[in-house]
Length: 534
Image (tube, rainbow, N blue to C red):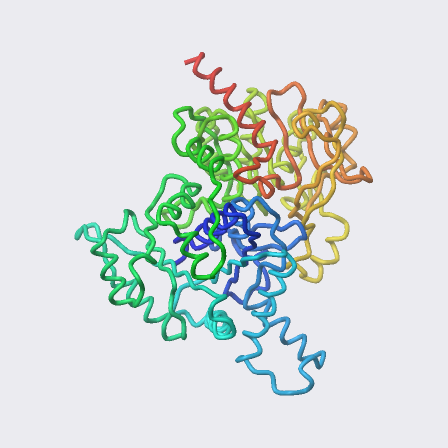
């Protein structure tokens, strides 16, 4: 089921095997017809993650990068839509030599070819493949068939790990195994028998439940791994290792057993989940609510990047979800509870004025403020209105008739929008950025040139660059040709930095992004100031 933790389980297994000295890569397969994740609503599907080479993917690619501390290629992501798209194009190009092209075996063969290519390109010794969706859905049947065919091709080279949910109904208080029993039988009907079962539940799996699963699912008790809820996702590889999952996988793959090296991981995970020192950080956005529930998945990379920055500062975060539309209606009262504020990414005009109000409050009250992509654009608008006195300042995206469009559509995007070319057409992937010498960001990065990942269609309007700089805004990051503004900052502010790119995409658990480390440090200083006032 969605949100159960298949991506984190995959990343955790990858981390364990990597810690034993094996070269690892991971692949995500999504069963929807969309060619990529770029056009999907984040409230419905969660965050869109962008690779260095510019593909908009499911958030699990981000999980792989954060756990494995390596870039994942666009080759490592596929959807039903992308696979069919390729097969149809091959048919049009006569690559099938005029024969009848069938769903089986041609679609699974394309999937298998992609898996092998991703493994070869990454020079991986072990490739982990996560198949999205739920057992029994017809959407992922072609991928299960590809998996079955791979196992048939080389039975000792392919293993299956099934992640299954064991509910504990509140009125009963007993962990139930029936859903897992039926899930395994459904998987069996696709010609697949799991080698391991990861038993997800609120608590540890006991021997009684293990015996039931073993009997009815035709699997050894030693291959049933308990996967209880944990305080931090970074504890999961350690939990799996308690059951020697890595060693068991290597034995089944007939690979040499090597010693695990996770000492640094253990140290960092303890800080993330158990540190007594805390810092209150606000995230202001507009993709939180789904019915009565708050959806953190829309900003998962930001949340994890903050955690990474916190462990480097020997603290853990307490997050406050701030709805920008609520701020528009009720004011900035909630902002006083937090030590610092992140203005998150987004699209469209909904909630924009709430973000601008929040930025003004942070700028005027010296509260750390970190803008990301859309957040930078809102920061530019706020500065233009309230410091440069351009009262009609806005973004072309918000009001295309405004007199002062300090944020405007990138020139190459106009024709694309006119022809409704939305999917995969925006500025995507890694681009170089030059840093202004002696600026705050140059000191934070300790470099003069960086590379960061982008995902946007609108940019800073250079027509307003001179008036902004005259009034104290520093353009501290820019494209090598100096045409595109990438970073802004206010030097006299404790921390007022905003980026057109997404630094959160490149933050890793064992390699935190320097901007998030610096932001958390500024928030800790502000926390001390707040306690002094109290």
